[in-house]
Amino acid sequence: MDFGEASGAILAELREALSRVSEGEIAALCDAIQRARAVFVTGEGRSGLVGRCFAMRLTHLGLRAHMVGGTTAPLLGRGDALVAVSRTGETAVTCTVARLASEAGGKVLVVTAADSSVLSSLADLVVLIPAGVSQQYGGSVFEQSALVALDAVVMMLRQRLGVTDEAMDLRHANLE
Image (cartoon, rainbow, N blue to C red):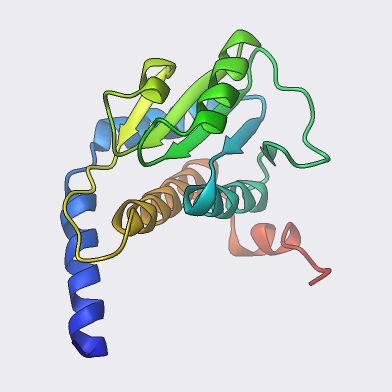
């Protein structure tokens, strides 16, 4: 297999997965994030990396966003939201964080490929990314699709909030 075939296969898998994501679920995720006092993001492994990308962009939008486990993450409470990213919906740490967030009065917003999972059962909202059979290793098609879906959420929120490139630039890290 050459690069063109491999990248073409990946893009086809992403198109298929993203075409099956519910517009209603994505709109509800945008609404919940807009209503939240602060947004906390969690996930493990590559799902966690996708979550970090999302939290960064929420910060660039001017929203209060934190990565769970970060040393400067404040207390999560009533009015806050947790976005939990997990392909299987069974990752122990992610499920524990979701349970704790719910107990603290936060809304639990889940991005997953598993609508019947421990994590989904803890959720106030589930965004299902139906990542099916893949030529790629492991959960790659889910993680890639989640990144694109959450970047689309950022674009939607940006338009809703009327945030300009210049405003986002002012919130971009300058110590890198």
